[in-house]
Length: 97
Image (cartoon, rainbow, N blue to C red; front, side, top):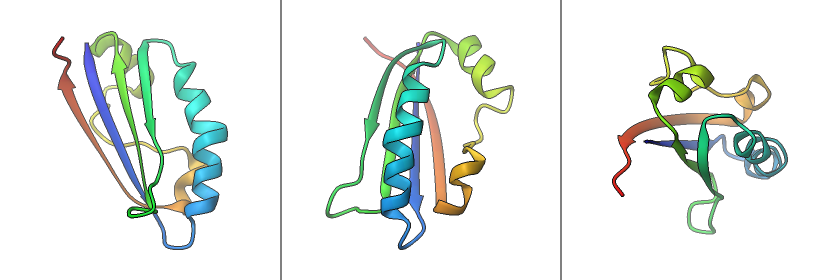
């Protein structure tokens, strides 16, 4: 299994708008995505109000590529959130059980 960690830093002043998108759109979308075994969404905290993340456990690399394409190592964002995001990062690991 593949562990995918996706992190976002919002633009200053866009925290509330991104939080709404995160909770109402992104979390349900990822939870319903074929090939994902488990999703752990991480919302902003008081000491890091602009940071959000997802830890996703994927069945395998093939299912991840089916979702993200061959360029799966590049952090993609929904066009609806592009104006809200200052930076993003993505990392992949083999899940150890």
